[in-house]
Image (cartoon, rainbow, N blue to C red; front, top):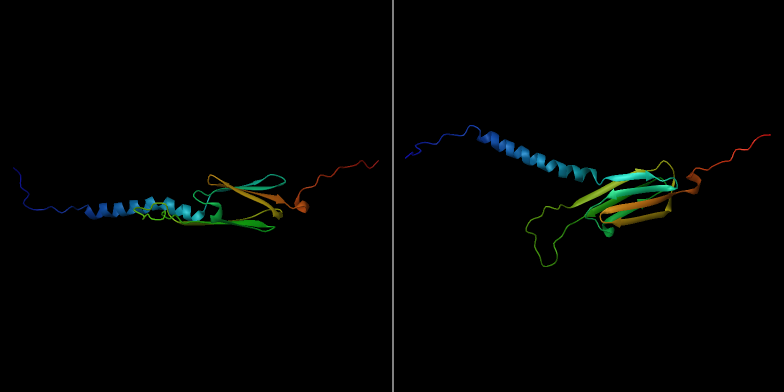
Length: 144
């Protein structure tokens, strides 16, 4: 039977420890990048107005704040997950986060003609262009 008489030091112990720390750091990068850049948003020009479509999972209508001016829009939101009353948190992987995105439009919009809906984590905002900002079609007459 074999008996270990002395312990041989592992020359790669520190290197493996560093590798585990680096792997943990890189595992957290995608989560940090999402927090920094906010939600994915599409801005569409529909001729008569603009439509913004944003992915805001986990947010409720009361968590969102939308400010509209003639020139642009700012969307802010915040998610604060909390445990139901009477429960304590055993493990939390869903983090709190804040979003803030601003856009300017190439033409003026009517701040009074804005509609926003939230459906299954997708925020859709429609904005009407001001009447003086809409393209006008002009008929050309013959000079003769």
